[in-house]
Length: 77
Image (spheres, one colour):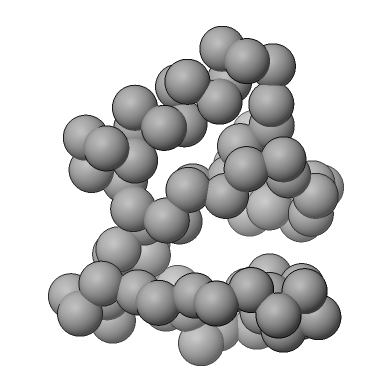
């Protein structure tokens, strides 16, 4: 399954982990072991798929709708 299909097919997650470093992976693994569905947002999106691309519109809509405070690492493009 490609990354795009995964995002498009599942838009609801129990946990969203922002950051894919050691701490982020540990959080995602722990959540999966608890039976939760997990989405991980990396500091660096795939090449050519910056967070301003339409692919992420459903994510931004949910973040806005739920009034979730969200901040990205300064290295994010």
